[in-house]
Amino acid sequence: MNLTLRIWRQPDASADGEMRTYEVADISPDMSFLEMLDTLNETLIERGEEPVAFDHDCREGICGACGMVINGQAHGPERTTTCQLHMRHFADGDTIDIEPWRAAAFPVVRDLVVDRSAFDRVIGAGGYITAPTGAAPEAHATPVPKPAADAAFTHAECIGCGACVAACPNGSAMLFTSAKVNHLNVLPQGAPERESRVLGMVDQMDAEGFGGCTLTGECATACPKGIPMPSIAAMNREYLRAAAKR
Amino acid sequence: MTMATVTRTPGSQRPGPRPPVRPRGGFLRTLWGSTIGKKTVMAVSGLLMLAYLLVHMFANLKVFFGPEEMNGYAHWLRTLGEPLLRHGWFLWIARAVLLAAVVLHGVSAYQLSRRDIAARPVTYRHQRRQASYATRTMRWGGIILALFIVWHILDLTTGTVNPRGQEGHPYENIVAGFQNWYANVIYIVAMLAVGLHIRHGFWSAAQTLGVTRPGAARVLKAGANVLALAITAGFLSVPIGVMTGVVK
Ligand code: HEM
Ligand code: SF4
Ligand code: FES
Image (cartoon, rainbow over all chains, first blue to last red; front, top):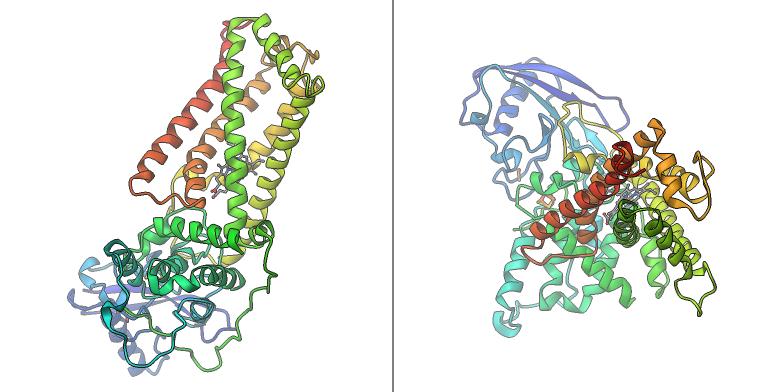
């Protein structure tokens, strides 16, 4: 396959960026999108040009590092991460637009790399369980009802990739935050910090400059892990319950 | 699955903003200070206005039963609550509550919208059509509704812009008002806007207030469509009735 790529190039956070056009040749349909970008970068390095910077780590769809907007869609046309997107979903001769996540809370560091540390700070504001660490406790010491375990697993799927923020017209982090709040708030282990968790994480989410939810639904459509829209309503309920108790 | 702690490129680290430290206590203060809380204010005030619109729409249908029925109803409204309340007090209380709802709804909408726009300062070069029409028109629709509320009060409450504007004679004022083509256009546009607003708003409010029961989404979306259609059609029947001469 031969493709035309239009990629956002920006040397650093304070510089202006622009879309620049590149041609790549002999791309195999079995390549992943990141392997296709690797191919481009090899030719750029051979030509003595700066390679395109993009985040990646596991390349198996579990770390959430590889975010980029492909043809206006977070992680591209398939509901998966960019590293798990294959070139067979494109056609020979296609022109593909590649842009970084766009949100005030995710400033561009370079090219396609954005600073997602705002997510870390949201987690730091309550997305954990305070427990003395030591040997792992006996698994059956705390019985977890099956529906609660299922709900926790659904929300624990979130890999913090930020596609929900990138896809949302308001740059809102409600889907991410709701996944993290619900994951722990449905479990007995999360119960002691149930109120302070949701209040703290929502406060931090607001402080980071993420937008609010207008129930557009773009986040859940873009989420590679299938975190569903009702998670947001569930977090709203947790929030109202906690605010009433405070 | 675990979420990787985000790799930070040296020099890119930001200290990160800290949220305001809020004193304990104060449910309302907590609400007003957060995006979820302000959205809750919008949901409650929106649902209150929706309930009012439903009653208002049903009452308007009395116009099809003649002047005595309509004007008698308007008079009865002023006697509600007597003798505990003085004549007309009920109406003033209702107006105060509605005014509070409109102001709270509008101020929250303005503040949240400003924030949402600031949260996405750069748009994508590759644009895609997003969301449904009702979802995309909430802000413009809201502005149309705000302007309409002002027009509507000047038309049929104070009578300022009504060609007849006689107090105690709503039936005659309605018939006189809808003789003007522009009054009809304003009214019809506003009623279509309110239908779209309710279509997204009713379902949206349920999410804001935390309705998560499985299967509720389908019922709520269907309910939003029924409410939107009933309110728009009910209100529109009045100017259409006047235009076609059924009401004269
Ligand atoms: C003063 C004029 C009005 C303005 C400026 C306005 C504006 C807005 C805006 C911007 C939203 C948020 C939309 C979104 O989530 O994307 C909204 C939601 C809503 N509006 Fe209005 N609106 C107005 C009047 C009304 C009226 C008359 C009703 C009564 C039917 C109403 C009912 C609602 C409801 C139920 C919601 C959903 C609240 C939620 O999402 O939790 N609004 N409005
Ligand atoms: S909710 Fe989905 S889209 Fe958002 S960060 Fe988590 S995995 Fe990514
Ligand atoms: S590189 Fe880890 S999810 Fe794509």
